[in-house]
Image (cartoon, rainbow, N blue to C red):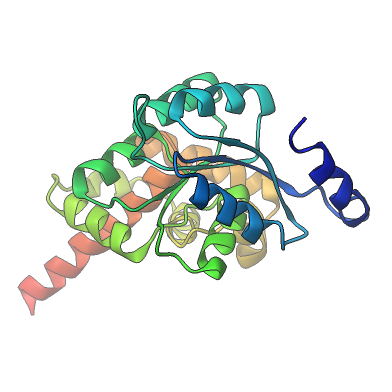
Length: 238
């Protein structure tokens, strides 16, 4: 087993704390994977459990290893990153797939979010940005590179307004939605609003149902669009 020695070296550090975040790397560039593994190995709360050089192998490893987080590149030969994302989530809808790519055009960004990615970073991200994003995605957040977030807000701002659906939300649900848009995890939302974690989960489920959305990422983006529309209205009336 290629990672057996690696697991042994980390055993003493990890058995005295919470289990580390188990991470699968899917990228066709060996140097990128090696650099990521060396970086993440420095953190006691993270553990790379596998690497795949193409989408098809990545899908197979994701099914076999059931990692906590999957770092997925989009531009790969053969089985593309989008193909892999769709296949991974079809097998395990609860999988948390964090896109790590050099590509950030409107079509690609929208496709990943619609498929259910748990976040989107560029390969220009700093080590701190990457590790914070991994932790946020693991806790249920939706970390987005600012450039990616701007693309989504502009695109969503071009779609028809959905204010009626937003009006169906209670004050508390709107508070939860706002925190979702900030990439907060359920535990963080619970602490912010002085609620129990199961209660937050119930609010999130209600929000998704009322807004007819599939996941937290779409909910957060919906809130950003709502803010975008309200800002435009204020400008038009000023």
